Every structure is written in C-alpha cells, then in structure tokens.
Image 1 (spheres, rainbow, N blue to C red):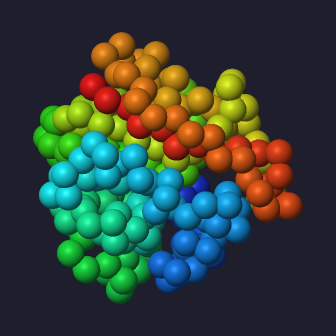
Image 2: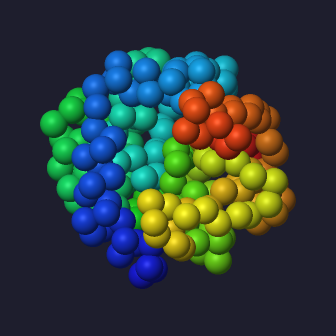
Image 3: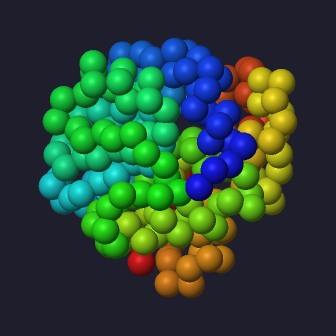
Length: 213
C-alpha cells in the first residue's frame, strides 16, 4: 500500500525523527516523566496483569525499539517489532538484543492470523490519515489473538494538528472507540488519560487503552 504518509516517513523527515528520538532507556523514561508525570513502564503496567512473560508481543511502528526494550525490562521475552523506516531498523540493531525487529509496513504485516497475543502501537496511529485507519487497524486486529493496546494522542473527535509546519501528517482521536467501531467483538478493558504536564504541551492529552477480543 502506498500513501503520502508512508513516503513522508520513509524520507528525510523520518530519519530526522529517529535522530531526535534516539536515546538511552533512562533518558526515555525521563522523557515520559517530564511530559506526562509518569514513566512508560508505569503506563504499561496493565499488560503485566493480562499477559504471561512469554506472550508474543508485536509493536507496529517500533522505530529503534525503545518501547520494546521497555517491555523487555518488564520481563517480557517474546518481542517483535515492525518498522517502516530502514534507517531506524538499522539503528535498532545497535541497541536491541533478543528482540525481533524487521522492516515493513503496518498496512501489510507479514505474520499469520492471530500470531501474537498482543499487538500494540505507540504514537503511530496519530500519523495515519483517518481514511486509512480501517486498513491498518484491520491488519493489527488480524494478527492479534487476544489483545490490542495503544498509547496515542487523544481527542473525543478526530482532529488534525499541524506537525512541525506540515499538514496531513498528525491527527488526534479516540482510537479505542474507532477500533470498536470497526470490530464489534472488541471490548475495552483499560483506558487511562495522561494529560501533558510539560509547559510546551499543556492542554493536550495522550491515553493508554487496552482492548480484548
């Protein structure tokens, strides 16, 4: 599948994004505390209640793998990532051990139906054009045996946001609700809002959601 957003992230902007967000795990945790007042490991805690440590987990749009390293630190051992940008995949090889990261698109995930116990995204659906969400959500749903999770920019309604001077590359929405609108067997079992505490982002909110088939 070819979209304007895919071309955007495969290019120099995507490479620059990777450079800006390449950091050690400790810096990554400090980034979350600075922006949301809580660490990402704390945000992810609901996963510990529903999954065994050897559960198969896939992150779609994993960039260099920091989120997966965080899950590894929580004790999860069967971790996979798929990332569109070749540069990010190459960088992931420098910092990830025991994590399977491949280059590919969330619109065409190269795994069989229900292969994973959990499929998740972190700040990825916000960069998918609303008209294309059913396609990528369909792939995530197809590959998940039981759970779908996300940490995304939140709004009750879909709203576009200017992204570093670019239009058509960032939206906020209630992505859990959109999933449930596409697939009526999905039940929301966790929803926590995380308003930004940093001055630069005050007034905006992200949220963690967990859906179960």
